[in-house]
Length: 200
Image 1 (tube, helix red, strand yellow):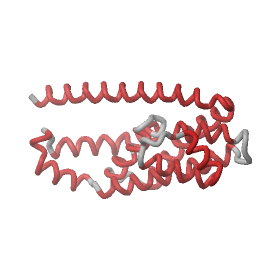
Image 2 (cartoon, one colour):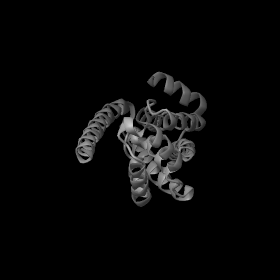
Image 3 (cartoon, helix red, strand yellow):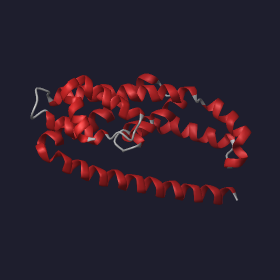
């Protein structure tokens, strides 16, 4: 995959960065860690600059997030409540559960969006509940951009700093990602156990 990304970035430059990151935000399995650190390394071997890579990647991230926000806005709370009314018994969900989740996101959603942009996998998915809760689009864009800018700047800078050893950083990012996935899985299991005990 690294060779393919290198060829793509060499051929299309900043546009290539923009498109890869845009796609990565919509289809998370394409790793931004690889694209950004490799892009950072390429600033030492091509005419591309760190600032250019950061701007292009941030534009791609925000564009992808805006698309997922739009998808989320189509899945509004009212539609979810109708689905729950139909199939909620199977999932042991009620319309009150949906309303509570929506209220929580309205209260803490801004920070969830900001910090979510710094967490693998969550980075992309956080845009959907933001759209569902009808978070102000301007506010969503602001905090998405801020969180994304930090993530992109760090990875591009690290890639440029370590040069040809950029792939070692990707290995460390894999460890970080796996640790985050394990933590999220544990939190999810704890929440489900607590939720079903509460319901019984």
